[in-house]
Structures are given as structure tokens and as C-alpha cells.
Image 1 (tube, protein in one colour):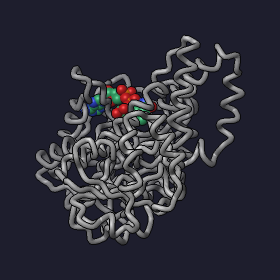
Image 2 (image 1 turned 180 degrees about the vertical axis):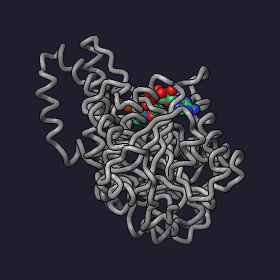
Image 3 (image 1 turned 180 degrees about the horizontal axis):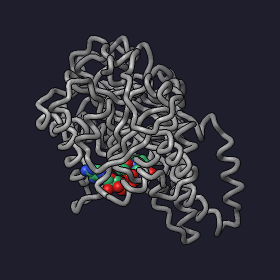
Length: 470
Ligand SMILES: NC(=O)c1ccc[n+]([C@@H]2O[C@H](COP(=O)([O-])OP(=O)(O)OC[C@H]3O[C@@H](n4cnc5c(N)ncnc54)[C@H](O)[C@@H]3O)[C@@H](O)[C@H]2O)c1
């Protein structure tokens, strides 16, 4: 039995285990791995290599036979050797009987397939079938058991699809009678074994600390600092990671298609691009917030799209950046419209804090929408006062975006001298800059606040605040 924190159950290993193996595995939970495909076969071999007793389970008798005899069902560097070693040491066995495997182990890793369903969504049938057997097994199992989901699935699937089936079949309650984790798999096919030993990260979403501790301890030999989070966050991380990788590939390919007709060496460009770990390959620009703006980004995205069109090159990713950016602006405008406010305070006018640069500041488009609907606007910016000479910039605003002419004409009179003056009588607030002044001013806000910069993180967030991406 597992106590969840410090002690793991001794497990009686199969006949044939070497004496030394007993010593190692007695301190480690035993594991069943459901689904012996690309993910499950690697988990089976690598967890055994860490000293766990592992029972592999699959519906496919061929895969069961291969794993049981220490042969790899897939082509993967080093996998066959680890499986052969695990079988020879008595740590690895395989079966088609999932109920038995769950009963005989402490932790169950689920890595069955999640193919695309006919409607384009996720086919849950394999998960549900596995969950039914796990539930059946847990019905008569008194010891604490942890179910570790590893499939790539839409956020919410573990708790809303898999767990209810296990609870119904077992008659037990998740996180009281058994634990559930979501542990996404980030290993690259082809180098999966070496990635397992040096993972890019280990993410553990858990229903309870006890289960999180058990799984964290299992991965401790390869990653002593796993990232603990909620099940849903862990589910989402896997999708976001893969979409990001796809975005990187697509971006690099579009750069290549753009460079070639211009006679520029795309690899020379990207070799320099990746050297910049301050702005290019870094957390910078990677937090959901407001639309991009300013004098550079919008202009240069348009310029690149124009160059590509001139060269007869189609770049759907780059061409659609402006479109996606517009959706962010329109969403802020829609959220303000939904408040029904007739007077709105806007905190932060420049395209980012710390500058008085209004060129292509996305908040101006929101103000234009408010004004077009007859809403009274009062605005404040820490770097822009009535004394700030913005006439040159306003000329740019008029020139760059004709629809903003009205905003440019009225901007000086919209400006409030203080935050309090801007907020006075406001029925809703839009805040686009994060600073302590705005944070303090909005701490007791009673009217709807559309916060596009996440002023507050955590429990101190006033209930009237609403963000675009959170
Ligand atoms: N392949 C990858 O590199 C990778 C990486 C990360 C995550 N994932 C995700 O992990 C999951 C598994 O991927 P895979 O590539 O290993 O799939 P796979 O199709 O290679 O293997 C799935 C295995 O599950 C077995 N199976 C299905 N239902 C079962 C059941 N009820 N009981 C026992 N076995 C059952 C199948 O027979 C098959 O052998 C998927 O959700 C996938 O999206 C895959």
C-alpha cells in the first residue's frame, strides 16, 4: 500500500527476478501501462529501467507477445535493449488482462490511442473502454491507486470523461478513494529513450497531493523538479506545446519561401534569428494580453506580406497575423459593449507602458468604436498629459488609419489629468497598462473592468475584473 508521500509498497516481483532487483524495486510503486504503442512501450521500458515492476497491457496480442518476450513493437533507438533487460530481470511482463494488471499494481499509466473522430474531434472510445476496466479493477481494491493519464486529449477530458466512468464502475470517489494525474508525454519519436532520461520538462497535473507526490517521486531520478499543476492545465500544455512546435515549423518554412525569391539565404537569416534569446527565443511576447501595436510590428507585418505578394509567394501564417490581432481588439470592444456602459474610463493609451508613442496603439481602435457608439470616454496615461505634445503623433494616427481621425481630433479633450478624474462617473473601465497606480485605483472597483494586461494575479483579483484570455 502506498502512503502517498514517503513510503512505497514492497511489490512481489515475478519469478525469475534477480536478487539485486528486489532490493531496488521494493521501494518503488509497481506500474501497469495500458496501451503499448509508441508512448506505452517507451514508458514500460524506461520505468522498468528506473527499477519499477511494470505490467504492459494491450488488446493487441502481437504487441503483448513482443513486450513479454523483450522485443520492441516499434522502431525506437535503445528500446529493444531496455525491454530485453527488463524482461530478463523479471521487472517487465505483459498481458491483455487490464483488470488483473490494475489489481496487481499501484499506479496505472494510460496511453491508449486518441484518434480523430468522424466529426473532427477526439475519439474517446479507447479511453472509455480502458476506464471501464480500471473502474472494475478498483471496485475490489483497498489500496490507494493512482491513474496517470498520458493521452493527448482536450482539456477537461480526464475529469469529465475518464473519471466518471472509473467512479461509476468502481463505486469509489476520485481523490478520496483513488487519485488521478495527468502527465503529458513530451518525448520525440526516434530519441524517446534519451529524452525520457533527460526530459525537456516533467508536468504533473493531479487531483490530490498524495498522487502528485507518488508520480513526482517516480520521475525524480530523471527530473528532480517537476512542474505540479491542475489536471486541466497539464492537458492544455500538451496541446499548446505541439501547436507551438507546428507554428515554429510553419514560420521557418514561410521565412524560407519568402527568402528564396529575394535571393536571401534563409538559413543564414534563421541562424542569426535563433541567436537572440532575449526577444526571439524567450518568454518575451508569450503571455496572453492585448493586441500588438506601435510603429514597428503592424507596419512590418504588412510590409512582409506586401513583399511576399510582390514575389508571388503565399504566406498564410504571416498574412493572418493582422487578422488575428484585429480579433483581439474587437474582443475588447465587444466586452465593453456588453457592459452597456455609457461612460468608459480608459487607462493606458500608448501602445505599451513607458512611452508616449500613440502610433498604431490598438486601444485607439477601441476608443474609436466607443465614440462611434456615442459612449463618453475619459482616458489616462502615465506618460501622456495635457501638456504632452502629441500633435505629430496625432497626424500619424490620422494618416495611418483614416478611421481614427475622429479619435485623433478629440484625443486632447479626452485626456484626464489624473486617474481619479478618468474614473469619476465611469460605468466601465478598460485598462491596457499594468502599473501600481492603476492596480491601486482599481482594487475596490465596483463597475466592470476589462483588464487586458492581467493587473492582478491570484486571489486578490477584484471580482469585477474580466480579461480577454483568462
Ligand atoms: N506518439 C507520440 O509520440 C505521442 C507523444 C505524446 C503523446 N501521445 C499521445 O499518447 C497516446 C498514445 O499514442 P501512441 O502513439 O502510443 O498510440 P498507438 O496507437 O501507437 O498505441 C495505442 C495502443 O493502445 C492500445 N489500446 C487501445 N485501447 C486499449 C485498451 N482498452 N486496453 C489496452 N490497450 C488498448 C492499442 O492496441 C495500441 O497498441 C495518444 O493520445 C497520443 O496522442 C503520443
